[in-house]
View 1 (cartoon, rainbow, N blue to C red):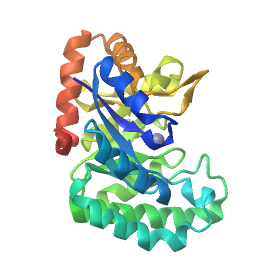
View 2: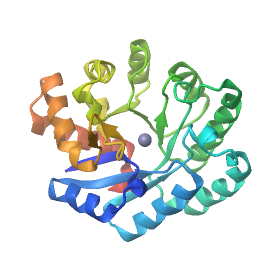
View 3: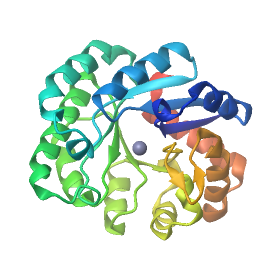
View 4: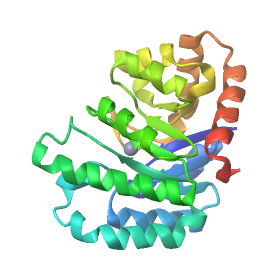
Length: 251
Ligand SMILES: [Zn+2]
């Protein structure tokens, strides 16, 4: 069984096609991660309509520049997450981003939202799905101050020494189709133990000229098995075990 642990399923025009394509190729479960206030509701709707879809709710770190009203909407989002907490498999996509969000006057709000989301994860004993682009050090400093069941760092391309720290702390690193062309992603895979790897599409983000979809997961697995020099089926079993460990609520 293959699982896409990070997909923005609400952003596809026809999500049912994306889900059925994925299932035909062996991707049986998809974790749909939220970004905005609007996406929280769409993600819950999708998870109610499709058995293969498991919801994660949270506020993406880029929301501080996408939505000038995010501060005002925060309480409502916290209520929505609280009401649905028993249906969630994770809090995500959350984090800090100092790479795409260059305006540092937005950073304090970004950090406040991130810490609020971590507080919810701790309260409901849920793992987190993290975006750490350009703020890897900051996020790694904050994480030990919370008591979280498990941590998934998504699309990691930051400093290599932090990967080692993450592994020591038992974090899981999910790998995207960017493994095809991105040297930092390849480096993350090289540094990661097989016991700490997960698979994700981050769809519908674009990879070169192709829209990302959960159907790319078997390809990501193939690339990982080549880089790690582990037979594909062995690695597939290991990654399934890893996924069960962190996202036990989807099984
Ligand atoms: Zn994402």
